[in-house]
Amino acid sequence: MAEMKKVEDSLTEQQYLICPAHINHYGRLFGGQLLKWIDELAGIVAIRHCGCTVTTAAIDNLQFRAPAYTGDMIVLRGWVTCVGRSSMEVRVDTYREALDGRREMINEAYIDMVAIDCHGKPQQVPGLLIETEEQQKQWDAAQKRRQMRKERRQ
Ligand SMILES: CC(C)(COP(=O)(O)OP(=O)(O)OC[C@H]1O[C@@H](n2cnc3c(N)ncnc32)[C@H](O)[C@@H]1OP(=O)(O)O)[C@@H](O)C(=O)NCCC(=O)NCCS
Image (cartoon, rainbow, N blue to C red; front, side, top):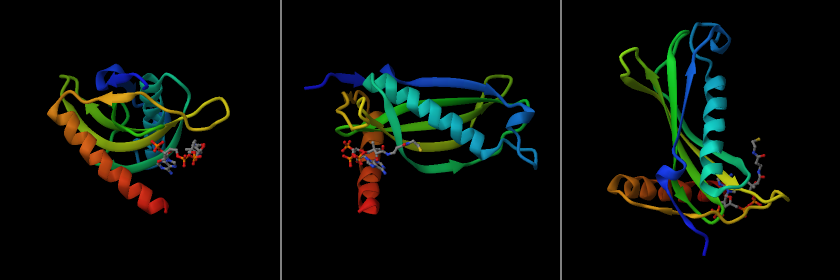
């Protein structure tokens, strides 16, 4: 059986300073830019979990809750919520961080990453060791989303 990994083993944070190049024509952070950062971070989380190459299978449920502007510092925080045989659901929360360190969540996203071998074929990933009630809650919710996605694909 493949080894088990903890949620913390792949939990990843990344910060960005919003510059004019990231801003759209009405002065807010461009959604496509944030999506790129989210996708990259989810990829890093997934690679850290499975230790191999991954590809994005789906970006599910991306919710922009609040805008960000030039000069804002934003923080992306991503972790694995559940795994299947070869797939991993990664949640990425994005925050705007104020000068005093307080964080306001501006985006929540769920990304399905699949571990692939050198031929691009799905390969088995380590299991996820669930250690807290919150992690169990997220695992259960992820299973429901996974089922819904499977039904949609069929
Ligand atoms: C993702 C991909 C590797 C899956 O390959 P596949 O041969 O269809 O694999 P399977 O049907 O056996 O599914 C493998 C796993 O992927 C999951 N999966 C496949 N398509 C999915 C989708 N659209 N959304 C979410 N999960 C998906 C399956 O649920 C399965 O999970 P499990 O092993 O944990 O049960 C393949 O579809 C692919 O390469 N897609 C293009 C990805 C890409 O290029 N992304 C970059 C962005 S453009």
